[in-house]
Length: 250
Image (tube, rainbow, N blue to C red; front, side, top):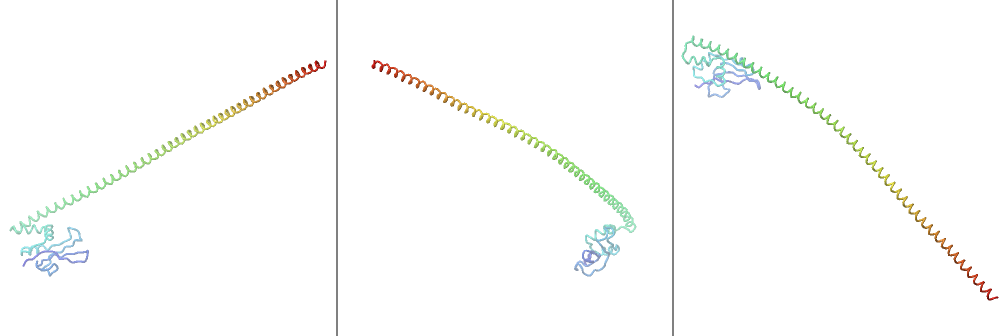
Protein backbone atom coordinates (compact mmCIF):
# COMPACT_ATOMS: atom_id res chain seq x y z
CA UNK A 1 0.00 0.00 0.00
CA UNK A 2 1.45 3.40 -1.08
CA UNK A 3 1.06 5.80 1.83
CA UNK A 4 1.56 9.60 2.01
CA UNK A 5 2.28 11.89 4.93
CA UNK A 6 0.45 15.14 4.13
CA UNK A 7 -1.88 17.84 5.41
CA UNK A 8 -5.62 17.66 5.88
CA UNK A 9 -7.44 20.99 5.99
CA UNK A 10 -9.83 21.81 8.83
CA UNK A 11 -11.02 25.06 10.37
CA UNK A 12 -13.27 27.81 9.11
CA UNK A 13 -13.08 30.19 6.19
CA UNK A 14 -10.02 32.52 6.40
CA UNK A 15 -8.93 30.60 9.53
CA UNK A 16 -7.37 27.37 8.28
CA UNK A 17 -6.08 24.59 10.50
CA UNK A 18 -4.35 21.45 9.28
CA UNK A 19 -3.87 17.92 10.58
CA UNK A 20 -0.73 16.01 9.56
CA UNK A 21 -1.97 12.60 8.60
CA UNK A 22 -0.83 9.32 7.11
CA UNK A 23 -3.19 8.35 4.32
CA UNK A 24 -3.44 6.02 1.38
CA UNK A 25 -2.35 7.98 -1.73
CA UNK A 26 -5.27 6.53 -3.69
CA UNK A 27 -7.90 8.16 -1.47
CA UNK A 28 -9.39 11.63 -1.96
CA UNK A 29 -8.02 14.66 -0.17
CA UNK A 30 -10.46 14.64 2.75
CA UNK A 31 -10.69 10.88 2.94
CA UNK A 32 -10.29 8.78 6.07
CA UNK A 33 -6.77 8.95 7.54
CA UNK A 34 -4.80 5.96 8.72
CA UNK A 35 -3.21 7.96 11.55
CA UNK A 36 -2.73 11.57 12.68
CA UNK A 37 0.92 12.38 13.38
CA UNK A 38 0.80 16.14 14.10
CA UNK A 39 -0.87 19.47 13.34
CA UNK A 40 -0.09 22.78 11.59
CA UNK A 41 -1.58 26.22 12.29
CA UNK A 42 -0.39 28.87 9.76
CA UNK A 43 -1.92 31.73 11.77
CA UNK A 44 0.51 31.23 14.67
CA UNK A 45 4.20 32.24 14.72
CA UNK A 46 6.56 30.43 12.37
CA UNK A 47 8.63 28.49 14.94
CA UNK A 48 5.67 27.42 17.07
CA UNK A 49 2.95 26.76 14.51
CA UNK A 50 3.35 23.00 14.13
CA UNK A 51 4.04 19.83 16.11
CA UNK A 52 5.29 16.50 14.76
CA UNK A 53 5.14 13.09 16.42
CA UNK A 54 8.67 12.08 15.45
CA UNK A 55 8.52 8.44 16.50
CA UNK A 56 5.37 7.73 14.47
CA UNK A 57 6.66 9.65 11.46
CA UNK A 58 9.93 7.65 11.57
CA UNK A 59 7.92 4.46 11.81
CA UNK A 60 5.87 5.30 8.71
CA UNK A 61 9.00 6.43 6.88
CA UNK A 62 10.52 3.03 7.58
CA UNK A 63 7.32 1.52 6.17
CA UNK A 64 7.85 3.42 2.89
CA UNK A 65 5.55 6.43 3.39
CA UNK A 66 6.45 9.50 1.31
CA UNK A 67 6.08 12.97 2.88
CA UNK A 68 4.90 15.96 0.89
CA UNK A 69 7.11 19.02 0.39
CA UNK A 70 5.46 20.94 3.23
CA UNK A 71 5.93 18.04 5.62
CA UNK A 72 9.58 17.72 4.47
CA UNK A 73 10.21 21.38 5.33
CA UNK A 74 8.74 20.80 8.82
CA UNK A 75 10.97 17.74 9.26
CA UNK A 76 14.04 19.79 8.27
CA UNK A 77 13.21 22.49 10.82
CA UNK A 78 12.90 19.97 13.65
CA UNK A 79 15.91 17.86 12.58
CA UNK A 80 13.74 14.83 11.90
CA UNK A 81 14.91 14.55 8.30
CA UNK A 82 18.56 14.59 9.52
CA UNK A 83 17.79 11.85 12.05
CA UNK A 84 16.15 9.76 9.36
CA UNK A 85 19.24 10.25 7.18
CA UNK A 86 21.50 9.02 10.01
CA UNK A 87 19.25 6.04 10.61
CA UNK A 88 19.41 5.10 6.96
CA UNK A 89 23.23 5.26 7.18
CA UNK A 90 23.04 2.50 9.81
CA UNK A 91 24.62 4.46 12.69
CA UNK A 92 24.13 3.43 16.28
CA UNK A 93 21.82 5.27 18.61
CA UNK A 94 24.74 6.94 20.47
CA UNK A 95 26.27 8.21 17.24
CA UNK A 96 22.88 9.46 16.11
CA UNK A 97 22.40 11.35 19.40
CA UNK A 98 25.90 12.91 19.19
CA UNK A 99 25.25 14.02 15.62
CA UNK A 100 21.84 15.34 16.62
CA UNK A 101 23.37 17.38 19.47
CA UNK A 102 25.88 18.82 17.02
CA UNK A 103 23.08 19.58 14.60
CA UNK A 104 21.12 21.26 17.38
CA UNK A 105 24.07 23.53 18.23
CA UNK A 106 24.57 24.36 14.57
CA UNK A 107 20.84 25.04 14.29
CA UNK A 108 20.94 27.46 17.21
CA UNK A 109 23.95 29.26 15.69
CA UNK A 110 22.23 29.56 12.35
CA UNK A 111 19.06 30.86 14.01
CA UNK A 112 21.08 33.46 15.93
CA UNK A 113 22.86 34.49 12.74
CA UNK A 114 19.50 34.82 11.01
CA UNK A 115 18.18 36.93 13.87
CA UNK A 116 21.28 39.12 13.72
CA UNK A 117 20.93 39.49 9.97
CA UNK A 118 17.28 40.36 10.36
CA UNK A 119 18.19 42.93 13.00
CA UNK A 120 20.88 44.36 10.74
CA UNK A 121 18.41 44.51 7.88
CA UNK A 122 15.84 46.23 10.07
CA UNK A 123 18.50 48.71 11.24
CA UNK A 124 19.58 49.33 7.66
CA UNK A 125 15.98 49.75 6.61
CA UNK A 126 15.43 52.25 9.43
CA UNK A 127 18.61 54.13 8.49
CA UNK A 128 17.58 54.19 4.85
CA UNK A 129 14.12 55.40 5.84
CA UNK A 130 15.70 58.11 8.01
CA UNK A 131 18.02 59.09 5.16
CA UNK A 132 15.09 59.21 2.78
CA UNK A 133 13.20 61.38 5.25
CA UNK A 134 16.22 63.67 5.60
CA UNK A 135 16.55 63.86 1.83
CA UNK A 136 12.85 64.60 1.50
CA UNK A 137 13.10 67.29 4.16
CA UNK A 138 16.14 68.78 2.41
CA UNK A 139 14.27 68.70 -0.88
CA UNK A 140 11.26 70.35 0.75
CA UNK A 141 13.48 73.00 2.32
CA UNK A 142 15.21 73.56 -1.03
CA UNK A 143 11.86 73.81 -2.79
CA UNK A 144 10.56 76.22 -0.17
CA UNK A 145 13.73 78.31 -0.40
CA UNK A 146 13.49 78.31 -4.19
CA UNK A 147 9.85 79.30 -3.92
CA UNK A 148 10.79 82.10 -1.52
CA UNK A 149 13.55 83.25 -3.87
CA UNK A 150 11.15 83.08 -6.80
CA UNK A 151 8.59 85.12 -4.87
CA UNK A 152 11.25 87.67 -3.94
CA UNK A 153 12.37 87.83 -7.57
CA UNK A 154 8.76 88.25 -8.63
CA UNK A 155 8.34 91.04 -6.10
CA UNK A 156 11.54 92.65 -7.33
CA UNK A 157 10.43 92.22 -10.92
CA UNK A 158 7.06 93.66 -9.97
CA UNK A 159 8.70 96.69 -8.35
CA UNK A 160 10.99 97.06 -11.36
CA UNK A 161 8.02 96.79 -13.67
CA UNK A 162 6.15 99.31 -11.54
CA UNK A 163 9.13 101.65 -11.65
CA UNK A 164 9.51 101.15 -15.39
CA UNK A 165 5.79 101.77 -15.82
CA UNK A 166 6.08 104.90 -13.72
CA UNK A 167 9.04 105.99 -15.81
CA UNK A 168 7.09 105.22 -18.97
CA UNK A 169 4.11 107.18 -17.69
CA UNK A 170 6.38 110.05 -16.74
CA UNK A 171 8.00 109.92 -20.17
CA UNK A 172 4.58 109.82 -21.79
CA UNK A 173 3.46 112.74 -19.65
CA UNK A 174 6.61 114.64 -20.58
CA UNK A 175 6.04 113.84 -24.24
CA UNK A 176 2.41 114.92 -23.91
CA UNK A 177 3.53 118.10 -22.12
CA UNK A 178 6.06 118.73 -24.88
CA UNK A 179 3.41 118.09 -27.47
CA UNK A 180 1.00 120.41 -25.65
CA UNK A 181 3.74 123.03 -25.44
CA UNK A 182 4.47 122.56 -29.12
CA UNK A 183 0.76 122.75 -29.88
CA UNK A 184 0.53 125.94 -27.80
CA UNK A 185 3.54 127.36 -29.59
CA UNK A 186 2.12 126.34 -32.94
CA UNK A 187 -1.19 127.87 -31.93
CA UNK A 188 0.61 131.06 -30.90
CA UNK A 189 2.51 131.00 -34.21
CA UNK A 190 -0.72 130.51 -36.10
CA UNK A 191 -2.27 133.34 -34.08
CA UNK A 192 0.75 135.50 -34.88
CA UNK A 193 0.51 134.55 -38.53
CA UNK A 194 -3.18 135.28 -38.48
CA UNK A 195 -2.56 138.64 -36.81
CA UNK A 196 0.19 139.40 -39.32
CA UNK A 197 -2.11 138.41 -42.14
CA UNK A 198 -4.86 140.58 -40.72
CA UNK A 199 -2.41 143.48 -40.33
CA UNK A 200 -1.17 143.01 -43.87
CA UNK A 201 -4.76 142.86 -45.10
CA UNK A 202 -5.58 146.00 -43.13
CA UNK A 203 -2.47 147.69 -44.50
CA UNK A 204 -3.47 146.65 -47.99
CA UNK A 205 -6.96 147.92 -47.37
CA UNK A 206 -5.60 151.13 -45.87
CA UNK A 207 -3.24 151.49 -48.86
CA UNK A 208 -6.08 150.98 -51.27
CA UNK A 209 -8.21 153.45 -49.34
CA UNK A 210 -5.40 156.03 -49.35
CA UNK A 211 -4.82 155.45 -53.06
CA UNK A 212 -8.53 155.88 -53.72
CA UNK A 213 -8.62 159.11 -51.65
CA UNK A 214 -5.58 160.41 -53.49
CA UNK A 215 -7.22 159.66 -56.84
CA UNK A 216 -10.34 161.44 -55.66
CA UNK A 217 -8.28 164.46 -54.58
CA UNK A 218 -6.46 164.57 -57.93
CA UNK A 219 -9.77 164.23 -59.74
CA UNK A 220 -11.19 167.08 -57.63
CA UNK A 221 -8.14 169.25 -58.32
CA UNK A 222 -8.39 168.46 -62.01
CA UNK A 223 -12.09 169.35 -61.95
CA UNK A 224 -11.35 172.64 -60.16
CA UNK A 225 -8.62 173.45 -62.63
CA UNK A 226 -10.98 172.57 -65.50
CA UNK A 227 -13.66 174.82 -64.00
CA UNK A 228 -11.20 177.62 -63.62
CA UNK A 229 -9.95 177.25 -67.20
CA UNK A 230 -13.52 177.18 -68.47
CA UNK A 231 -14.32 180.30 -66.43
CA UNK A 232 -11.27 182.07 -67.83
CA UNK A 233 -12.27 181.09 -71.31
CA UNK A 234 -15.77 182.36 -70.79
CA UNK A 235 -14.46 185.62 -69.33
CA UNK A 236 -12.13 186.07 -72.29
CA UNK A 237 -14.94 185.44 -74.67
CA UNK A 238 -17.12 187.92 -72.86
CA UNK A 239 -14.40 190.54 -73.01
CA UNK A 240 -13.89 189.92 -76.68
CA UNK A 241 -17.57 190.11 -77.33
CA UNK A 242 -17.83 193.32 -75.34
CA UNK A 243 -14.98 194.86 -77.34
CA UNK A 244 -16.63 193.88 -80.54
CA UNK A 245 -19.88 195.39 -79.45
CA UNK A 246 -18.18 198.61 -78.54
CA UNK A 247 -16.47 198.85 -81.92
CA UNK A 248 -19.64 198.17 -83.72
CA UNK A 249 -21.51 200.82 -81.75
CA UNK A 250 -18.85 203.48 -82.19
